Amino acid sequence: MRHKRMKKWGTGLLAAGLLLTLAACGNAADQGGDKTSGSGSEAEAVEIDIFQFKVEFKDQFEALAKKYEAANEGVKINIETVGGGSDYGAALKSKFSSGNEPDIYNIGGPEDVNMWLENLTDLSDTKAAGEALEGTLTGATKDGKVLGLPYNIEGYGVIYNKEIFEKAGIDASTIKTLTDLENAAKTLDSKKEELGLDAPFALAAKELWITGLHSGNAFLNAEFDNDVMKAFDSKTVEFKYSEQFKKYIDISNDYSVQPTNSLDYSQQIEQLFSNGKVAMTQQGNWVYPTIADVNPELAENIGILPIPIDGVTEGTIPVGVPMYWGVNPNGSEAEIQASKDFLDYLYTSDEGKQIVLEEFKFVPAYKGYDTEKISDPLSKDVYTYYTEGNTTGWVFMGYPAGWGEQTLGAEIQKYVAKEATWEEAIQSAKDKWAEERE
Image 1 (tube, rainbow, N blue to C red):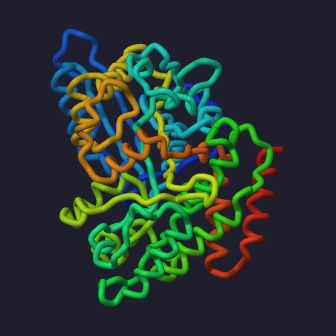
Image 2: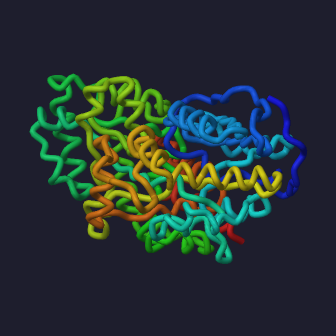
């Protein structure tokens, strides 16, 4: 891969870590092809380098890029995907520090916006920004400028195997509280031999983002009024719902395949859940393609249960924007405009919309989509929770950089390993938040 010319680089980024190594995760780091210059067009040839984190739709995204190239002579798109078990944040810093800067890349919420501010283009004039659903631009807007376009809407909770629940005599629609979830786990545990289960649950505590970002967010969003900017501006964190948080981690851990600190994403989803060895695990609608690849029949018979705060947000799941697309202002005018045009095509053209819905399996964060075509059961559940108002927000993008994983996730690992009490783990997380926000 040839290097672009050296682009403007802010040295402060070298010392910073990206907020998220999130989300919807596999275990690969893949690079899309060697770079060549565009050719054969009377217009100026332009290359767009895209560096993105979501491995689940890598193949479909690359196929879409080829369609775009075929329809836009002289445009060459190079896609590099680093996600899942790889550290996207570290890889992105490396790209910029080497001078091989991407034209389009991913950022999280307000922490990332501040961190990468000098390397983000104002996208307020794009068609996609104008079509974004209410609230989806908040985490990537600063001083009235839209600095990132939302990927999609994602939701997560406790995904479950409907067939196993039916065999166990559990009515999933009655599970609204943590006590309901615990009772379901007890029932499954009592019948695990006849159901062919290794355990009712799989808690992938090895993955710090699962516990520190996602589990933590489920119990901190109410503390921050579902407002990512309130979390971002807060000097302290109280863990107002610490008791409920502890109960959820205890349920997940006590009824899980052990040891939970050794369970990674691949074991959690590909080996255990997709093969019917566990009935429940915390994940989101982004895992559907992975499950469908392993076990297509099972993939059509799964759903999402709540992660509730008893007495506060019962019957709800957290829903939000997982990442944003940022455009590098340090390229040529042609590269910047081509990047904007591609993102507009992706989310606002008829062809792009069809691919986003039917091939990417995204729940769109933009207007003008036929949501009746949302096809997979997890995304359908997310959309139902969303449209019925049974959702809470995503505030983890407002955590201090690295705190969710390296502090809270690491402290939860200590707790489940019995190396710290819950009180010690939470106090350490409180102290680190305050220290980071001094």
